[in-house]
Image 1 (cartoon, rainbow, N blue to C red):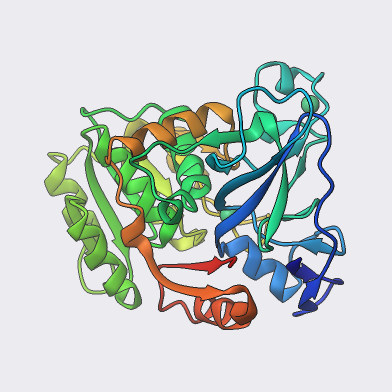
Image 2 (cartoon, rainbow, N blue to C red):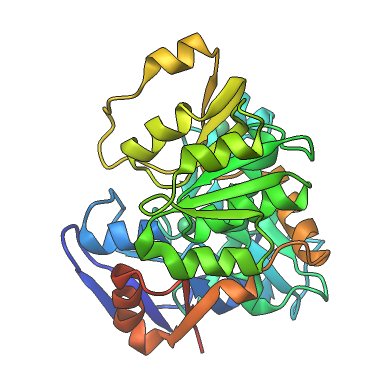
Amino acid sequence: MKALVKTASGYDQMALQDIASPQIREGFVKARVAYSGICGTDIHTFKGEYGNTYPVVLGHEFSGTIAEVGANVTHLKVGDKITSETTFSICGECEFCQSKNYNLCGSRKGIGTVVNGSMAEEVLLRAESVHLLTENISLKSAALTEPLACCVHAVLEKTNTTNKDVVLVIGPGPIGNLVAQVAKSQGAYVILAGITNDIKRLDLAKKFGINRTVDVLTEDLKQVVMDATNGHGVDKTFDCSGSIKGVNQGLNLMKKLGDFVQVGLFTTPLVELDTNVIIQKELNYIGCRSQKPSSWVTAIGLMDKKQIFTEELITAEVDLEHWREGIDLVIKGSEMKVLIKSK
Ligand SMILES: [Zn+2]
Ligand SMILES: [Zn+2]
């Protein structure tokens, strides 16, 4: 089968190869892949900035159809339309596995980074990780379930956003957009901040009903926040930019006792954070890492009830043979979400 393989460490080192179709085994299913999203992680991998195992097939946000079912799998059958969590294997014994926080298991292996992922014609999946799509969820939009689950984890599991909250989201890329939409789905008043380069992305968010979008280079974000909160500051901030300048500005626009959730990764682990404002306002500065099984159930529920715009985020699509064009489009930053079609 055709598969997009990261063959070695370093820049590029990626190729479309003909590799053996995965072997079915007990507790696993094989899926024919429909669509895979290209994610920021894949770009880091392309550039050689991410520690993968080599060789590995990329792709960890996807949809497909079950093609083969292994022994002892009872809840899935051939032809089912599905998406899947990225967990391929876990230790099953540590305290994080016991509480289904698989994202924190030290022995966890994920598809598309450590074991072969979905940018191929077929992919092998741990049956327990697989989720059935409802009739309301298209294969195309289902390729966004993984990023949506990450956003559900941030907005509803790492903190609890409600209709009483005024929320600030920094960074209007695919993750910032979905974070803003999840907060909106709970009835929160949502302010989404970006820069002039993001203007198309801010406009798109406005179409999705995000209450207020702000270009921080031409508008005074502080004024917007204070006007929306009677001068108290926002209840919750989600940084989806990984920009330390944005983070420190966001911390200073928060209400006392607020929750600040760090979703975006910084380019370097040690940054100059305004710790004084965290202390003086008794803010909760919260780390957030990918997603866990419960996040998927909520994400699929939101998509099923059409509470989140997903297909509208997909602005470009390439087939496997043209994977390089897809990568280039994401690097250029002019598209919102780019999908690779497997067949
Ligand atoms: Zn991703
Ligand atoms: Zn574990």
